[in-house]
Length: 297
Image 1 (cartoon, rainbow, N blue to C red):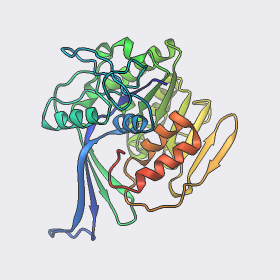
Image 2: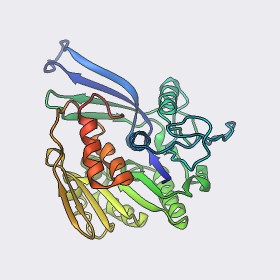
Image 3: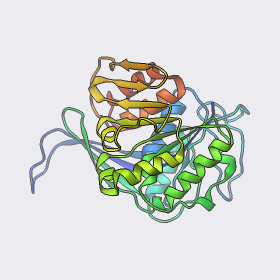
Image 4: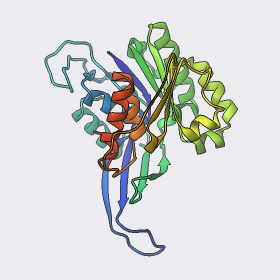
């Protein structure tokens, strides 16, 4: 299976607090810095689950064969992440380098300032994010290569629908993917951003993508008026209560028991698992993610 992801490739800064924050004081914490963003996370987990990574396609780079997890020498069909407009700065180079070591390489222009997301994680593993998307929203439709979307599935970050011109790029990418016979999946963005943007306007953009699969947590699901009718399959991420899949059949699965260290990226891991192997792999992959610090495998 060849999966393309379109959306966020950002620098993640994870801060897991060892004690509550106090204004004007210092607090003990465990930290992690590395590549992140919804689209990049999904691609990294997909590679980890056994798919291959495609070579980078940007001006000045020659296309060469890669094997499983980016090992040279194989000519099998691969998986790639078609990221957003990655920054050409120190943060952007760090993100690209880490993704490459994970068997995922960015496609698209590299210029401007990279986005950064800070996730503050409490003792219960729940995270609160502060996001700066940098110049990522500048990805334009004419910067997309139609060859990227000759795939089996295009996975679009919902954040790409909240700003221009990247929203038009998401629409164009979905059209290219559908024309190639691919499925299109969309993972909704934070409900607070949808509320600020306008739920009906956001839903209209979702409908225009004509997705086959929708991923949403419960607040996101509710704010768009439920995703009924938006896609043949809806995957509702319910945190500690597991997952609900609505489609030809209704499927509910609880999460496996285990430690909860950090919820950052759990929804992205679940989406990758579902696209690669269905509901059981989805909840198992999300459980792996929350048992560690950070959003990537």
